[in-house]
Image 1: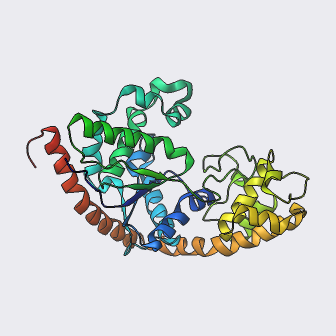
Image 2: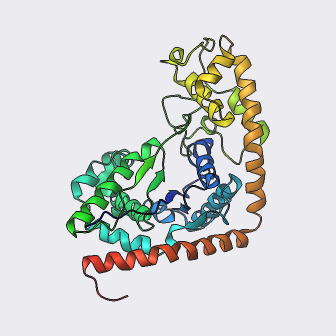
Image 3: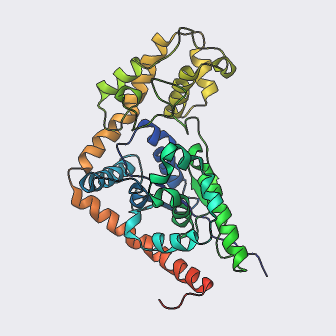
Length: 340
């Protein structure tokens, strides 16, 4: 049997589970826009609201967060006329294929997922079944579009690897090569942005300290203040990247500067070698304000018209469903299901 060559296609998504941070922008949204503009592969971007409800969400806050995330996508450079942009729950194929994959994935695979262990903690028997099965639905998110490339942060790499396992097992179980085996795409100087208060922890919207993160809704003064107050150490910047070993806060700020400027981290270190953070932080603050303030302003403008955001999402869902529906029909046929 001749090997099937799948058309290259990019898919990625973000949960609407709170405000967007600098980490979301540098680790995902900025890269999404760059991938779209390269034009090498069709790009599909999704607000994964079904994943969000694996833990309880206030309905009105979820609706607002979904629209705010959509505004964040667009303000960060995602053009709905170039990329497909939609919310997951509006395309039935995600849930339909997700159930098939629940029956393909093995219990042991799910139990090894480190994110489930981290989120469930010692209370694993009281979390939702949805949280446990989350990775199978993520596999469906990707494979319902036959996506071949998945831009993700390092913390999601394990889930894409599970998606590969599910695709391979489905194909082997049914003697087909219907599903592609997707590749995680992890690149960039700041794919994992750390807390401004603790360089060993990821920047998170759930951190109780607002000073630990830069929100995409922060104004220029707030952005500058947070960077000025970011934790560092008393040593000057070294001459090479090796000199940042054991200095997580310093390395984090250098990575942020590199990602915002488009320079390599080594270039940034060379430029500021020997200088104190009293010099480096104001330069980083100016750069962050320059890059992020237009995003904040555009998000605010877009959120003034929720009906337009809903229209964009609905149009994107129509486009996404046109791709997903035939793939789901074929998957149903492969497993022996009868009917439409």
